[in-house]
Image (cartoon, rainbow, N blue to C red; front, side, top):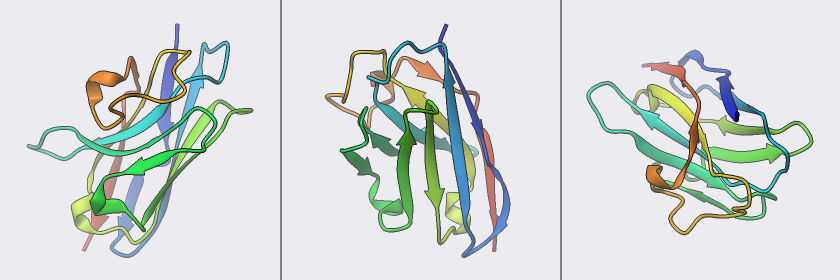
Length: 128
């Protein structure tokens, strides 16, 4: 059974940085795409970033481009989200998501329905 566990969330002042991690267990290979989503109170879950199985392809929502960086270490079965220049609008629960194995990339990586496994989320709060 694949499990995803996020960590690294917390409270930070505007302009600060955080690095989120998502550790995957129960995997037998590294051939799966990963994504980060977030959900703010009263809002729908929103795509943030996605990365291909070898890390060569990434995509971001426009609001985080130039501030957030997604990366992965397949030797550790871990995906990261480096978040710089945080602002209060980034406050949300951040979730990592994974495709099934065998999918190096996804047809629509910005769609939550493309992912088969989800973590429970980690809270990020940015104070002004």
